[in-house]
Image (cartoon, one colour):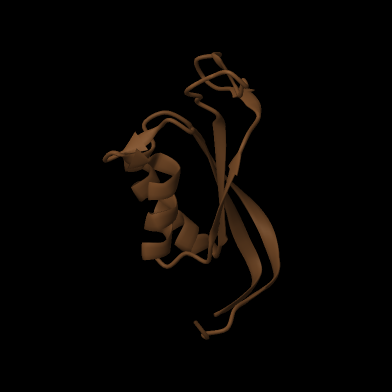
Length: 113
């Protein structure tokens, strides 16, 4: 697959403790993006952040459980990103979803395993 030109960056902000059918939401989103044939996804864990409820989420050394901020980025062609948005609308119950334009300079991969 080769992608170049105008693209979209889909960014999803959620918490690390968010779940979808018993599994971490971030993992479920990545799996679903792969099933839908999107070019790729990256999950990044934040150190500290807050969202709509203004509750601070941070990593503390002695915490047994944390709810760290998670950012998922997916970059692909506009029509593929737009087609994935209704799926995310169902999966993300609390969080933030943004889409912005980008220029894809190069995205290629081989078919080898």
